[in-house]
Length: 296
Image (cartoon, rainbow, N blue to C red):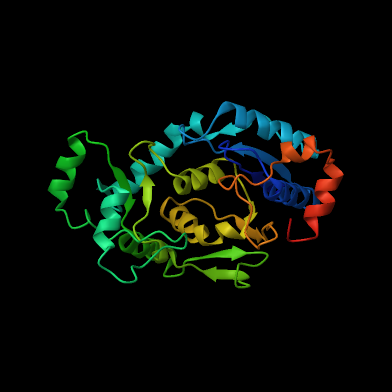
């Protein structure tokens, strides 16, 4: 008998949940129920500067109010840095990481002479490889100096190594549809991100590294999340191949948009579930309004 499928909802406690989070949580929860699977809640709190205990408490309160139940204990990323350090050490041993001491300002200055600098899917300028040309001995010397630095993924080398491991095929399976209608086995293009940061100088991991390690350790079989994360999936699949981790099935759902067609976000201080509750909304109201229409 095959094990039950495992789903997860993984918010960050860096603000109050809004209807977009409610849609994503309910989408995941209902998919888990329909599949006869397990539903896990994970708190992605690797950023101590932005993640706060009162936001974490609000996540539990809001999700309970929506009627969701999950298995205990809840995995909190901040309590598992050793897991990420182990994965990071494996990548370093493969020779796919290198130190970078450049600030965002220095990176912007390095590409300022270009009329149209290449950008990643999030719109940030691609890292121009300022530290990549350093000789290996100089890299080791700089890292041994104790000066804080980011660790970047040597993307061409990582892709080449992944292709060696897979026989040349690198893809993930999309069950629903990407932003351009992608479905089924999707060939990945992680090079669109350039040499991404895998561990930050202030936090010894990154979202990308932590999420693939967590998904593997928690035996996540189905990843359901918004289409805004579709283009992060190639990075996650690449890391899964390098670290020899299992590949979940992916389902990227539509986003909840405001009247101007902009997706809801914490940073824009869009209306929170707490505020809606204070206005008299019920969980049934939330489910009715945000499971059919795409706009708020």
